[in-house]
Image 1 (cartoon, protein in one colour):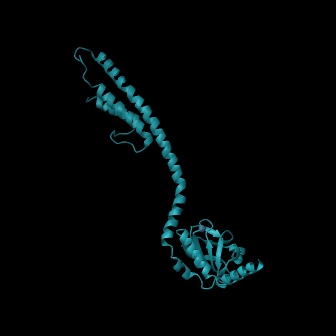
Image 2 (spheres, rainbow, N blue to C red):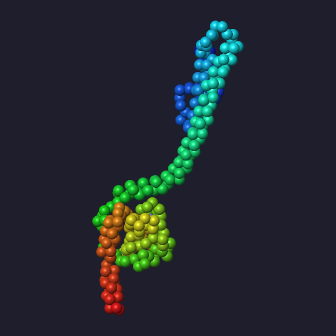
Image 3 (cartoon, helix red, strand yellow):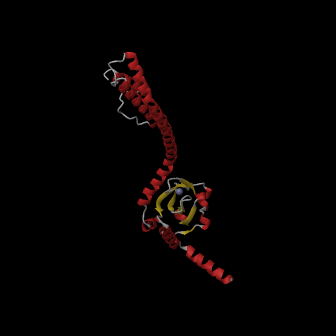
Length: 248
Ligand SMILES: [Zn+2]
């Protein structure tokens, strides 16, 4: 045992290139070899040091042959288990890799979503949002603000992206003060109050505040609030309805 234990350890070391047999590798793919190293090391340590029946009567060579037979006897299940373990760990490693590929792709979305979730929590109330919306606003016809579209302007949306006004739907337009509420083209629950900036002419759009509708109810509430704020639309809309009724 005193001699065979170091030999067993040496075999373990040669197989695993690892000094301490008691530390299980974190790397899944290294575990089958670690197992093989330990099993062979123990196999050598014990089979070549165990006491044999009739030990005293046999010579060194025959004792070695008997011990080798024992060594091989234990070696077979060790190898079978090693091959099985290796097969299993390869499968596990593959699935871990697949998962990490997926998780490498996902973070961008997840971070984005998380960012939106935090923003949703910080979202102003409808009242707070409406306080920043000018008192006098008009219906943005066809959801467009011609002046902004012609200049190719874009705004920083509450979803974290920048959108061209041509791609976004405008609900209200304040006219001369250049305040517009745009709905995010990606998430229809995000309402951006933007205002035109620039010294002499409109150069860019600044996002003043963003309202995040948490549910269908809030979505309707903000729409109603914006609708009620529209000045001319009520009159024009009233006339349109009257006109439509008269035509019938
Ligand atoms: Zn957006």
